[in-house]
Image (cartoon, rainbow, N blue to C red; front, side):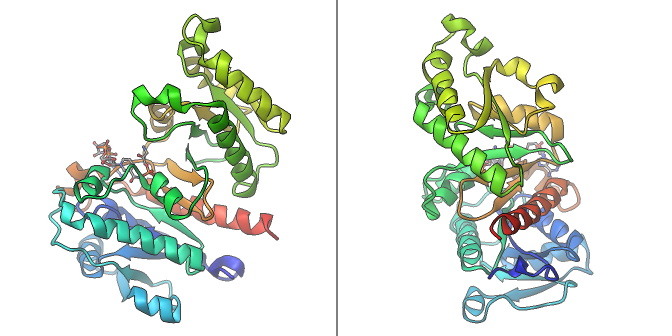
Length: 349
Ligand SMILES: NC(=O)C1=CN([C@@H]2O[C@H](COP(=O)(O)OP(=O)(O)OC[C@H]3O[C@@H](n4cnc5c(N)ncnc54)[C@H](O)[C@@H]3O)[C@@H](O)[C@H]2O)C=CC1
Ligand SMILES: NCC(=O)COP(=O)(O)O
């Protein structure tokens, strides 16, 4: 039984604080404190370091540190909402805001490992991640592409999908057919099989985690003008159209491929639950233009709920000290995780 299975209990959500030299610790603390009456946010990070940042934000923020061993033995402690629980994940080195130190890279990954363990064990109902610096994890000697791929590997998820969502009642949602991939490798990665798996994951998770009965998915073409009848590329004719036909035959409400430059207009979007873009920089700039600062990054296809912010580590802001970063996207990511917990609980009962 997870912590949110009783309506009277605040959902417990793990928040990994991410790259310590970035804005992650600050936005995690600010958001957790703001939401404390509705959500039990458990921060995962270096407890003494977080205490310093908390004090700089607001001396009223009260933290209670617990060790992984204690939680493994006794479960999450039950503190009142006026104290934020910190699951201690010690850093290797002193942090200088704005200055990356690969010696802390492995601790950042340990935060993720703790969140995964705790979410799978039922200490947490979901996990939310603050941004990390992908290059610093690689500089620490660990090949790393992103949280999405790391979580897929650690949970043995066969196929995951990155989806970003704006906030609001009828939010724009943009999912990606390929994720962190060099542009030159994109065309070869788009196969009928991978597109079919992506559409299956989208359909499944939009139903089970978002409560949408029959989600309508619009698919962007890969090439300009969706290939212009084959004169500007054949991927639409050879791969996308057959994959969409097969998905329709499986009962998925999918349309396209549409030219990506015309698809993102209200006429098309008003009846859509999600747009599937073919690659990272085809879909995400649109979403970020529409809602930067309030967008949410969601990983679909995992055996757990994970959301994140729509931005990176913002070292330029961290370097200036606390008080410059907007924590709006973190608030939305935590709220979205809590909503997904509620939908998932409802759809499994
Ligand atoms: N979920 C994650 O872990 C993500 C991590 N990243 C990583 O972050 C690092 C830096 O990426 P960049 O491309 O520089 O993007 P970035 O989002 O860190 O910064 C881009 C611009 O947006 C501003 N900005 C970002 N977040 C803000 C906030 N909360 N409030 C106010 N302004 C904000 C920054 O000051 C900067 O001017 C990279 O290593 C990248 O991989 C990027 C996106 C997501
Ligand atoms: N552009 C989104 C991004 O890079 C975040 O990736 P991930 O760390 O959530 O996989």
